[in-house]
Image: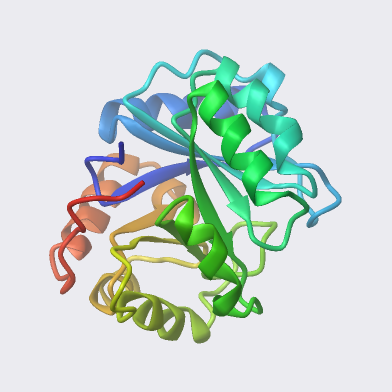
Length: 224
């Protein structure tokens, strides 16, 4: 299961009011949402704890676990009926145990690579899930500039002959650079700053959707 829209609104806020407002927008605009979960140790930043989230009730949801021990969070995410947990390659986990736990909880997995991560480290994880998130910025705060290496990483992953990857880019995506991200081969972009700036969120979202129309790579038909 994946989002039906190429632009997935992201919710990163420690304020219950802002969190609820952005979740409601994601529900009505995209029927999909991307949550950021932080423990304050894996990287700096704050987010509303999972236990304080309102009811999600959305078609597709994913949680980006910017935490040191992602296995500790899967049960709470499953309790919120989150579709997919996104696991940083750089975090602490045992792949076989993580896969078994996710299966038991009926939650899908995806894997995340930070800007300085050797992409070769993804290979073992791709046997579990071909859903890959490329960080366009260093994990933590929103509003950072898209790093120049991001498009190179996306192009490299897209050219891997034996993998039908679903590739998302999270962080630093703006309306001016979104077409380039899709042209490089991304299937999805995750957006916070570019979407929730100003008062006209719907206009921002439609403009980002328009940017997705330039993408060159088709969506893979199958992904785990």
